[in-house]
Length: 319
Image 1 (tube, rainbow, N blue to C red):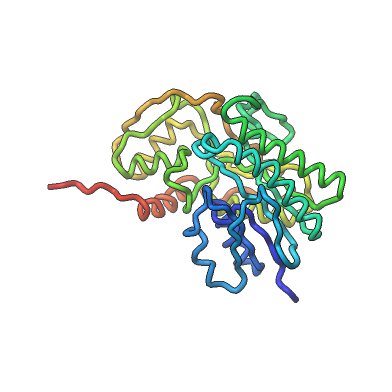
Image 2 (image 1 turned 90 degrees about the vertical axis):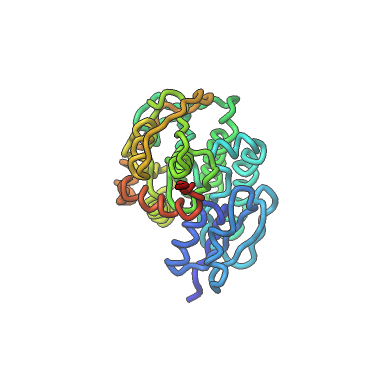
């Protein structure tokens, strides 16, 4: 039998590249697509020698054509860090709107099932805690983060419209904070920022007073949840994340302990609309997918630290 074929947009990015690995491992023919604005070919260079891997350098906001059959499309193309989407807000909106529309059209033409990468940011600065999929969110559409939040909310609406109107097989994963190897060191998110600063012996930058919370999920756990959701029969959004919640201040202490450096903190103003709380309710993922995270934060951070050590020039003490 011919191998099943999957298109993964954003395939050279942090999450996309791990998905490429997983689908190759599962015996699929993988087509990765990326415009490399925030993705990096280093993340997938180990796959180029494989017969069952292809790469297309393309912006999905423009018309998307892939020859041959397609069984699945995973739409992971989008800037995902505030430092990126504040720099390129219009491209961020376009990849969530035009890009999603192009790929839904491709899925319809090919008879493929499509999974979109949505985000916990659709809940905005939530008034419900923990956040479950029935919560509609508290988003500022005209604030600086609106370009990302509203792109993802529109993406969900467009995907459900294709599902309801055209009968297209669609899946929606709402991803909470994820970490692991291949994160960009300069992507501005708290985990790479803290690890980079600790390894360089710099003070850790905490925005606000550090009482805001996040819940960090290791990338392998996330990929497992996404894989299960794709192959499930469930079309409504599903949260995938780790419910283990921690304040940013406590997280800074954990990072310093892990890296063996003294805790030094530099407090900075809290960005506008920065969520105060972030914790997934994963009841739906447990019930429908039989999924829950397996890698605890201590183990996941150790693995991530090893990756960062290879990427960062650690200052050596002079005698």
